[in-house]
Length: 128
Picture (cartoon, rainbow, N blue to C red):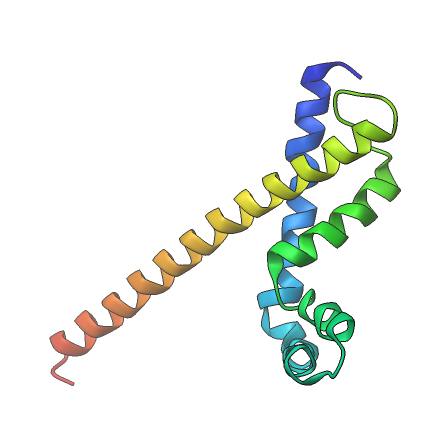
């Protein structure tokens, strides 16, 4: 695989990793399991158990595990075509996915802020 193809794969594989990690750690559909994991990450008696539950509450942490699964499915390697290529691909994919999630969070917050401002302006126009 040439370098251009590897970069395209890197940028494209970051999208499902970001999507899965964000959905599990932020969206309403996983709220109940996430709240359970938050509670367990604070109350479990052993450190390994607390860390295990914490990984489902942090998009950065969870993206590492999603990346491992994606690498196992796709066999994607970056620059080197042995075990080192998997390691390079793994860290690069985590970085790309977290960049995508940061951009998404920024856009989502900005959109929410604009919606709140518009609602306030509409209420003030209608005298509410």
